[in-house]
Image 1: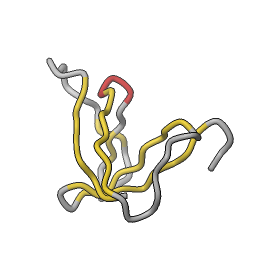
Image 2: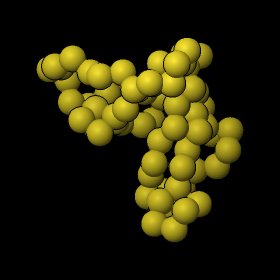
Image 3: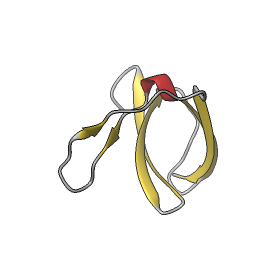
Image 4: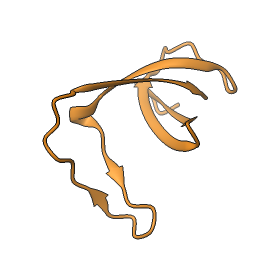
Length: 69
């Protein structure tokens, strides 16, 4: 926990990701949760060189996944 927020480390479809959520989010390690992402605030990185991947214009501003945390 980092004060006003909690950092979640999660996996979906064999892809790991990190999400920042409000500190009072009731979630425990190993639980499955439904998450929605505001894609206008999402950042993606190349696993080989660590560089940020720039997004092309997209017609979707939110994405939903169900993930094990």
